[in-house]
Length: 307
Image (cartoon, rainbow, N blue to C red; front, side, top):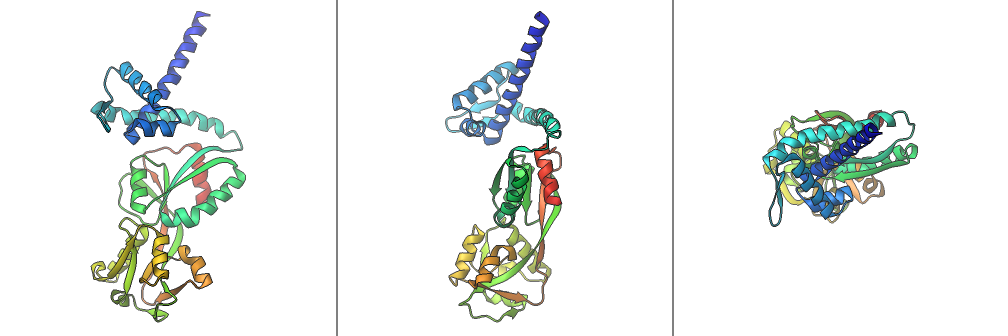
């Protein structure tokens, strides 16, 4: 009887320690008690109590509390990697059991640059859920640079981007082909086919730095010996929709993904200007962290994407 009681206490202590680690990891990631509370569906005082109890247990301070922010201590920086490893191993227990069940369930967070996040993932996530109705998808959309940084920094487990940027922490798997095209308003007086060097003399609307579309276009110009600085950039916008709207209003031409303007080309709101002397094709990539193990749900979705 006493042995069973001790075993029960050890198990409860183990569960509590794991919960402390999860709260600690969330606070470390967000550098905020309130944001951690929101992510974990707890109250802010509860998160503070967990951190305080964890600090008492470890006999060290993990966060310095300043008036408007908290700063992780050196002890916290040492602990975070081990904490994430333990959490992933415990989550792996659920994955092992989940492999015996036919149905998949859980919360799946994917990072995506603008084109895959807006024009590719909605269809793929919808078709995946037709067979796995208990899966909740959350798609975080930003530019390629930001998504790559989030995967490299352990904020995301998987992402889809439109450019291959240098990162020692990230693995790239080729996913889908795409093509960049030049589009203009119907009002824009321009031939149906031009040379890539003719772009230097035209007003151009562009995406911001960090955009995969812009990075790939810069690489195309570089290959053709054209200096990006010589272009007549008349507008820079933070989204593809804003770029398209500016082009429709006659602000200038733009270089966009063919996938992003399929509807506008079909209904005649935009027209394509063909580039006769340059290869404008590019690749989308699925990215993962080189040292992170994907949970079972993420593995299954990755297999679905690659199939």
